[in-house]
Image (cartoon, rainbow, N blue to C red):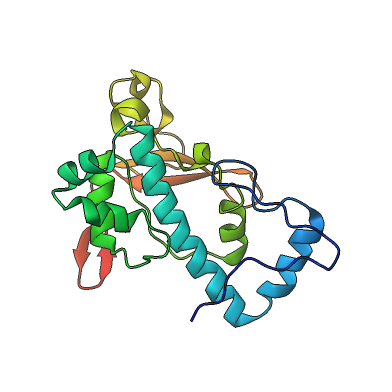
Length: 199
């Protein structure tokens, strides 16, 4: 059984509960210090990540559905799955969502999906904000498709920059220290050769 990732506050201190969409996980430095002490234990780290992933996915599915003003029935029609499946996907205690199902949801919501392994420091930074607004994602048309931003966006700039490999798209990104670094993505999707990507 995975232990509850919510930590106990030092005696005499009251827990401040934040319903989904209000507040953030790291409220005070005392809470952050307590979390840091607990994260030093491997079993706690594993449970903490598992619970954040399970709850985060369920809450974000619900947030994306609500953002589009769909009920569970509408989402189930678009997914071509029974409404009970949507209910399970939005249940944080379910925890058995497959990558295939996430890809299907991404397609229905018309958003990208990123599944990757990251460092704990990145994970903690990215999971600090559990507000509903942080879980909303614009679909393609609102993000890039029909907004007219593609003409001015550096992501779709056809001009070559110094050091830019030919046939790649410039993508600005930020590293952990928030300094700008340049990354280049291939303009064509990579082909899969065995179990490794070949460009």
